[in-house]
Amino acid sequence: MTEPTQIVALIGCITGIASLIGLIYAIGFKLGAVATKVETLWTIYVLHPLQELISQGYVRMESPYMLTSKGEEILPEDLKIKIREIVRSKKFRKIAKKDSIEDVVPLMLDKVGMDRLGEVASKAEMNTANIAIVASLYALNRFKEKEEKNAKMDV
Image 1 (cartoon, helix red, strand yellow):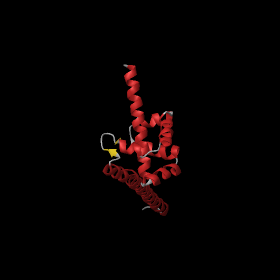
Image 2: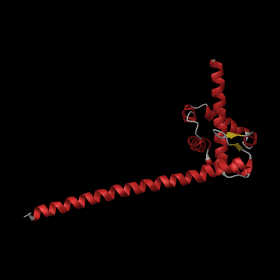
Image 3: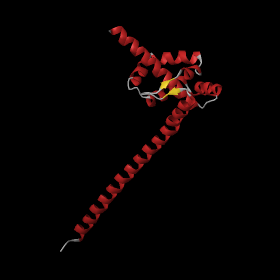
Image 4: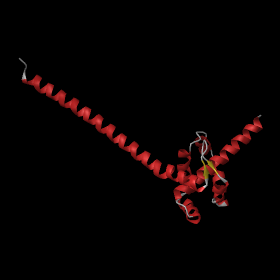
């Protein structure tokens, strides 16, 4: 026959295991919710504006996306100068080597500033997300041109 202490210990073990399973499930559920939120934000702030820019003729859908001359025209010259300065930075070169716009957009927002991008957006009658993408593509295009020029010089 089992003693009462063994029964209590067994109940404690079962309760502990159930708590551990519940904790693992809760953490997994929360991480899944965060991933869903990030994906939703990505869709709202990058994919939809990219599709809008493509339909308006500011961006060409290639691999990767390319800014058209129409897209370059909406950026004022002082902003282009600022972006070219950013392209020369080590941080940008490190990010740009991945050739992914999702890494460049936050850097543009940080280095250029939401206020400045908002000013340009209002003059172009666009939203700030669209201008941030245009500025990011302009930066990526300048980076690629610079890389191609350096590669030709090495040959």
